[in-house]
Length: 215
Image (tube, rainbow, N blue to C red; front, top):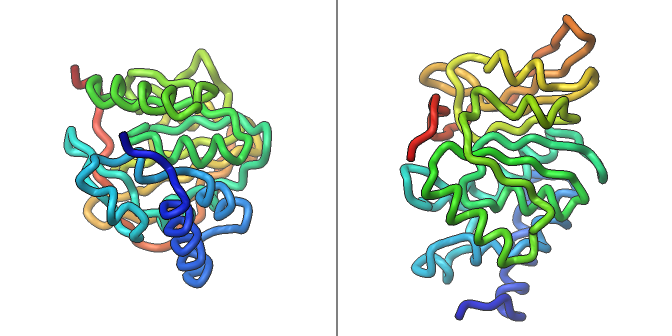
């Protein structure tokens, strides 16, 4: 059985120091990352290098993002304790766990049925029973649970998902890798019922956001 011991906590602290030097995230986000046992979200073959700032495959053609990317996206999201956040692309569950450690109410949707079941079990076993997991099409979002204070998309979309825009509260932000070919980390603000504002940041590389449910 893999545990979370003093050695893992020491490696996590070193990772957070590295992220801090890189300016990857706010102190609130880094504190949350320091609380999440990343090695328990990975295949056992990656445990020894789990606290390197790199992405790893998690099956079903998906990856767990590198910690600096998680820190960056989470910081751009501008959420606070009690915020209701929709995550599109549950993946390993690591990003959702970081948000949960920040006191955020997390709703997360995954299109890969096998990955959804595996990750939902991992989150429960690690005590993240407050995270609400759903199997579904990320382009559809969760209209019955919205509107949300923020939306975080962890896959690259060629175009803005229009249905997700409608699930944002006025004043909410969506952080999404956007573009065909080259992706740009993008933040969308909902200014009013009919107005949205776009900010573009650095280039990035995410797995593509796909339609439908893969069973």
